[in-house]
Image (cartoon, rainbow, N blue to C red; front, side, top):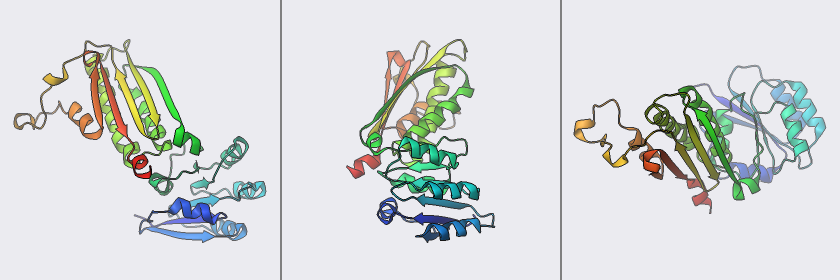
Length: 277
């Protein structure tokens, strides 16, 4: 793995300390921190190697538009992240015009630094985290998808994005929740709706900083969960199927079947919220 260099323009030491509090940088990350904009700009313009570089910009409390203009003109190839205590609509649009990869507001959690180091997808829309949203806000979504396996990826990206914005651990956002949704949606499409594309899968999502609750409902006849064989039993170990419900229960805090098995309700609590409260 190539070494990564993290270039930081640190114009807000207190915010810098808050962002990095309780975190440890990986051994393959070198940090270059600057306290003045001219030296910072000169350094990132001199980048010539092809190593993965990351740029973090902690702007003045009052956004300096001359600095953002110079950064935009610099045409930085490396991912750029804005760490700021707050972000109004005007500043948000200014940052977007710079082509930044992410805008991160407090309260910070252990996922934020890892998200910066991993880099975000270029197609992902930056979303300014608002401390009131992540502390007190809630999102509820209710939608239908056709019985097509190709639609699962879009739902997974949506849930992964929401979980990340509400401060869930990176492993939950990128691995566990998508894996759970793969299983729940494919079961609803293949077993519940029998792959009939005219039938729909109803997805309901509730998320806050405390927990995420997901309901997946198909239009099938349901089933009796108690009659599903245990995949850990000796006689079932080598079977190629039947592990779906077991996987859901292993990765989620609660798995409840309703409407005769046509609805599965999945709940995951946010461990970071418990640790911080």
